[in-house]
Amino acid sequence: MQNGASLSRRQRQLFSIACAAVANLPVMILDEATSSIDIRTEVLVQQGMDNLMRGRTTYVIAH
Image (cartoon, rainbow, N blue to C red):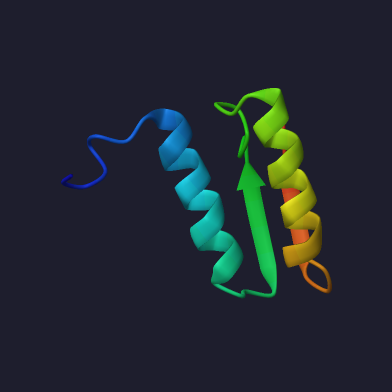
């Protein structure tokens, strides 16, 4: 794998969310973060984000 070329859009999106979550920044902005993710996975991601972002400011942009 080079530069994530063999990852699907869904996999790249989940990887980006994970990287942002573990960066431990005080503020996170997510723009269309779950647009390529199925509903079941989106629910799991949202539950995980609720726990990870506790005590931090999070902006979630959805169109």
